Length: 404
Ligand SMILES: *Cc1c(COP(=O)(O)O)cnc(C)c1O
Image (cartoon, rainbow, N blue to C red; front, top):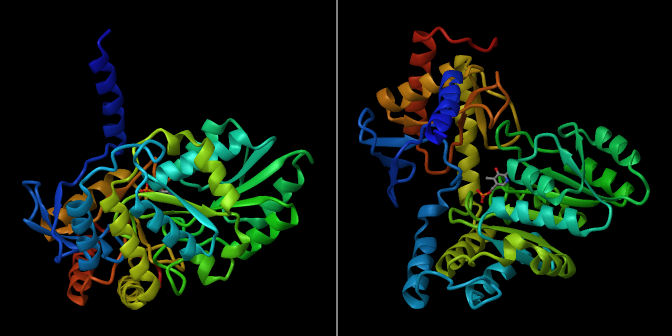
């Protein structure tokens, strides 16, 4: 069997569709973010990153860097084992306490990534709770979908952000079912925010557990960065809140928070928690400083919102079509995978602007887009440069404009 020919065949098909993924090789520069050094031959040496999920630039915050370096010097690099066998450190305990407090929950549980936390928690809930049925918003992230699939629990998909459809689907369940409603606060590709109160009310009416992914909202929304559930005063009505330490908190790792019993249950039964080496203590220490900082400091969130608003206004003024939403994510719609890739290439090569084309399967075919995430560290000049570049491209490539 010529396995390489099989691999290449599959890749050729992706390339023909325009969906083959090409990574940009960058070197981040602490202190200069969102500027980065590009290692691709055809691009300027320094580029501006416009698609980072390090939304607030916490990945280069001096206190976060200090915590990571000092802890590595004091404690060494790796954790040395799983949490169960010699890998459970003081830094893990401190970070879990910080996270439980962030969401006003009794307890938190760390994982090696947000992906793993969703996969492990949902697969454990779905497989261990008797008669579990997971009701999943149709736009849920791949990590939730994989966790649900792996659990082999019953699965019901409800229409995106539609509490009425959720209500109808909960009403259809047999009465012995144990329903778990899984959804996100900020959906990262369209940037839309869920009608959380309505969803929570429907779930409460049916006695269903709620599982909320706040990955794109933690650090960003709410007076202490506790997410949309904090902003809307709903955290105490949600059973489980899941988040990441890798996006706005600028480090890496994932977590769930909830009751003492819930977290102890996942800790005790989740294979994706038990059988993997714990996060390095230095990573946990850095994340803890970042979370603590964003609990106190509004400056990053305020400046970020101002920059988001500015970019949106400039795009509107030029008639560049972008999806309206209430979040910090600005999707500029291209609706063609080949064009989307081409525009991203030109932006990078001719203008030193790095924005990754978002194509299938991340978004449905025909909804390809450039997804911009302005942050507090993008200057007004950066915005100006981006807007001028887009204006040039829209003119040269005769791209569609939004009707004013
Ligand atoms: C990125 C993402 C995750 C995974 O988090 P990581 O920490 O990057 O593994 C989970 N859910 C959503 C909605 C995401 O966008």
